[in-house]
Image (cartoon, rainbow, N blue to C red):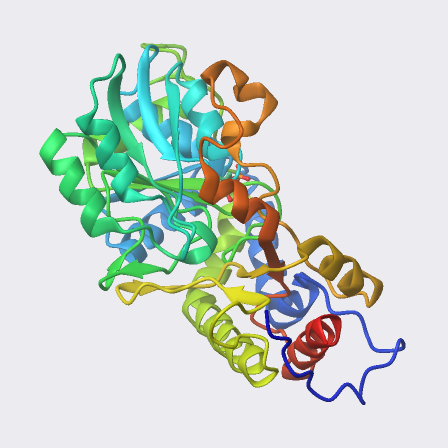
Length: 394
Ligand SMILES: Cc1ncc(COP(=O)(O)O)c(C=O)c1O
């Protein structure tokens, strides 16, 4: 492999400021007054669970995604569970998802009593490999597949055209895991309206984030929405009547009020993420880190149909762990999403997957590295990150 030519590192010195993976303080400074006013509004109302703020957020997010309805809940994990149950997934069924995701994509399936069928990913985007999904449907199988759960990983939609074709042919609902992809779209159709239902997370690190845990499901089906409203409140259509097993997954009014402050900014913030991603592409190319052939750094690819919102900017890096250590020494924040694919997690041993079964994900787990990414990330910080990477490979 040819070595890339290093860019100038004259500006490097150990006294450089740290570059965090994510800095929420910068965002807070720009919206502080509005956030505090929203919290005060809820405190003045003394209405802390569900209620008007949650209903308004649900309406606003349904409008934002083009869905028929939205149902707020306690977390993205619960949002997945609510969507699966409302789509009819139950004990003994199976649901197809990707092995290269956060744990909740699969644990929400097991919580319904169903079995996750984990498939490998496309090597360029790390989104679910649709050919493998199709192959599973065409195989003789002993499980009733009740849903497909694609994850829009790192802010980019999975290949929804191909998935929709499979879903139509086999009459199977798609439930989007949209935890990382608010504001993303596929052929200009917003994530959140590409399947029968979609689960959003507003965990504090997400592109649209609460000040605690929060989640929401969007759906094209108003009846599913009503079902999820009952499920999130102990399966209860009215007080002290429980028609089915539900859970407490109600959304707090304070979280909803804060999310309502932030929602009008999300398109601008996503655009800033996209600009920063483009700038990384340019800097990495200028640094000679991505020559044709066998480059030491490979950014993930964006599908032409996808509007990517860069929840994460992820590279695949040769000698990833050594690179990460060097960046950590320089106080440059990085993260590995995900070091162990789900099929190799100890708790999923009962599914029977072995090392080598899903090789693209296993290789990705050894190579991926997320670089600092947030709307307020400065150009000089990005330059320092790339200079440091170039120095490592020089
Ligand atoms: C892909 C994916 N799915 C589901 C979740 C679960 O969301 P939450 O943390 O809000 O429960 C997350 C959050 O980390 C996620 O990244």
